[in-house]
Amino acid sequence: MSGSVPFLILAPMRGITTAPYRTAFIRHFSGLDAAMAPFVPTVSAERIHPRLVKDLLPEHNGGLPLVPQLIGNNAADFVQMARVLHDLGYEEVNWNMGCPHKPIRKKRRGSGLLPHPDLVDRLLDHACAHSPCRITVKVRLGVADKAELAALAPVLNRHPLGEVVIHPRTAEQMYYGSVDLDAFAEAYAALAHPVCYNGDIGDLSFFIAVRDRFPGIGRFMLGRGLLADPFLCESIKAPSLSHFMKCDNAVSRIAAFHADLLARYEEILHGDRPVLGKMKECWTYLALHLSNGDRMFKKVKKTQTLAAYKAIVDECLAEAQWRPDTNAFMPPEPCA
Ligand SMILES: Cc1cc2nc3c(=O)[nH]c(=O)nc-3n(C[C@H](O)[C@H](O)[C@H](O)COP(=O)(O)O)c2cc1C
Image (cartoon, rainbow, N blue to C red; front, side, top):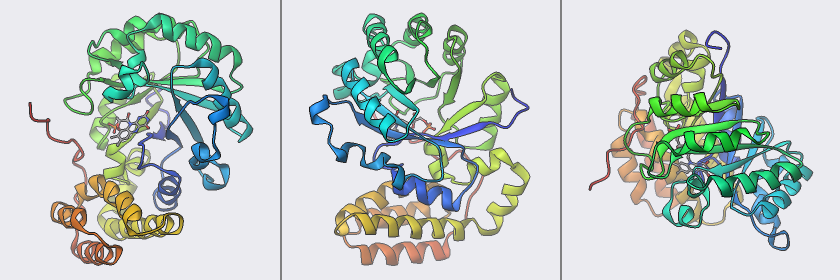
């Protein structure tokens, strides 16, 4: 598969890769083939409110094939929600079995399902039999034990899943430390389903290393690395062309994307605070490849009004230079 063109998917990032973000992103950057939407919790039929699926409405999501994602541990609720999504036109739905946050995993949702093969078996049994949408799952290696996913593989193999997306960290690692490609290799070998790789693709060389080590994998999901370097999918698809483009007009393309995203949020959110909240989260990543990104992000974080925010961003972007080709998004290890 390594000779063929890779299929690149925008990772779900709750609060960040919203419909406005996805729409603005594909207007300004190319190379993505699809996106997975951030998770929506499964709820019982009578509690399904239109607000829950607002971000998924087709009228807000033209341009890029989108896979909705659900999180929960009730198969009947999952199926009800899948029916709602199917009515909206979706053919596929992803089950989040990877969310690492403690309050979620303690309730046996997200990655909290991984140590419970019998429960996963029962859930998939019901969901695969009744969901009108094809089901895929997004998983980690385990909660604390990297071998949990390989142990779960025979259960996943029993069900007609469309794909398994693997982020090769444990839940306890959250997003720190390195991804474990050996443990990924073990889980990949144990799975009969198509596998999509997700984790730490932050520059072209890491992408190439993963692709070359796993030539059978054709689908890759990119999150923080792509948000920090929105040209990354262009680099992967056409390395020489995108290098030229990056050096030439990267900052002006970032500025155009930023203006578009800001305008979209100003249109749908009311008041400075919610818009600022959204924009500040984006700069967590987008500042990382800018020569003055550190200083800019510190200033942006302090702003309380949109007018002040816009002045800072305009001033900083006017001076910024793009620093390409380093995997910049890795946060430092947390303090013990
Ligand atoms: C702020 C944030 C929000 C996230 N939200 C979701 C989510 O809604 N669903 C999900 O499956 N993963 C979620 N993730 C995990 C990402 O989809 C992805 O698996 C993770 O960031 C690793 O990929 P990366 O190294 O390319 O960023 C989130 C990650 C972050 C940092």
